[in-house]
Amino acid sequence: MADSRIEHQTTHFSLGRHAQQDRRTSSETDALARPGEGDATQAGGPVNWRGMTDDDYEDTFGALCDFLTWAVPHWAFTTEQFPYGCWWQHSDITEEMTAWWGLWQAYIRNPAANIADPLAFHERTHALKQRLSETYRGRCRHGHQPSVDAPTLLCPYSERLTGCD
Image 1 (tube, rainbow, N blue to C red):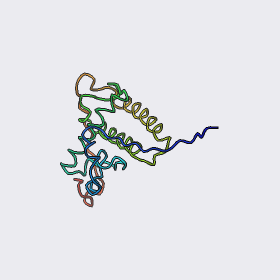
Image 2: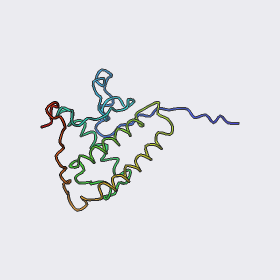
Image 3: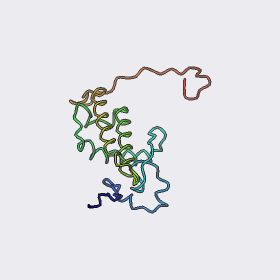
Image 4: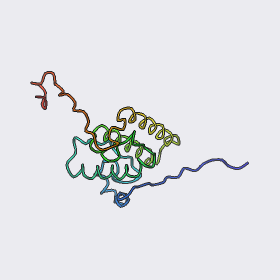
């Protein structure tokens, strides 16, 4: 009877201009903690758009754009699910896509990933597409439509909290 064991093989993936970054030395990658940056065998970290320097924002946003340019058509997002021409102008969609990008990296760049991780990613992608179709509803199919302005959020005990007026 033939041996049916499957040998685990680590495959390194990279996208676009980030292929060059994946060949950096370990001392160069130690300082990088953003998804899309650093050694392809390391999972990306969470993205905090609010707390980034301008340079970090530019690099990270560029890496997100590289990923989405490939991934959104690859997973066949429709115009009912994703505003192809203005997604970056919708903070909620930018955050959703950032989280999806981080999830993709967590499974694709993890040499110890479980065999079920790709399936979990596809299930989460399906859930994301459903969620976006319910919340986005294709409102920018015929050109950008700004999101409805949110009401001002009041902060209780504002005298004790910084940043609340």
